Image (tube, rainbow, N blue to C red; front, side, top):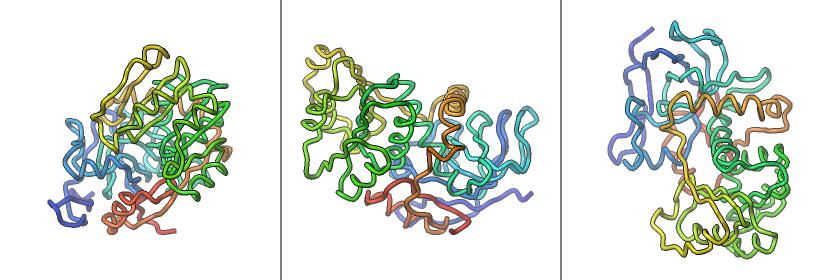
Length: 327
């Protein structure tokens, strides 16, 4: 194999471009994947601005998830083989021709599923499980509020919560069309946050046991108000900013949990624990088609600049992908 590969690189304020870079090599528990698709995440945009660097030892190349084919693996890897079609999560390196992925963060692509469909699954499923089901201990019969309900994470959260027996799924989105889409996907209440007061609507609906928030800003106080007694609120991003002024008395009186997590920098064994839980609890629904990847747009890798601009505008529903195979 050649020692170089192409990758999408950042050059100061210039548009993203393809360039030759050094090909990665496998660590003890890694496989080398020849990439077909890479999923976009808002973390990529933040990293590009210099505010979300990769953890130590991770690739500087953007891209936290991919799909493709295993072309090499470490001698310590078991259960995987060259030629396997896989999708997986990594701490960086997805916007490229090849990437290394830890074996514990891999999923085997089901027969009949395309690389593009599979490429839309790893980050959203692992983020939803890690936050809603692990951190917040969501269980059947509870109510859930999802902000950004038609994002990649939001569309997956609706489906996984429905599979888990949610009593009520509520979402916020920014247009009537997005609200309608979320309802078709399984949301019971879809709130247009540009025209409606989600805080009042959720309270009138009995409140939320669990709230998944990626907005931050003044939503933090509103989430506290909208939560039920004993509710759990988790932040996975702060698109409106992390610095807020709060009245914390309701947090105490309602016995709430206010928490936050990231996935990228977790150790590999923790990511494997998350992957294994998804395989046990939700992968059967993927195989049956009851949980589906939701894809907004697919761009070729040499249009990564346009793909990120599309994500930054915020009008998409589901995942945005880079792909070597245009459908």
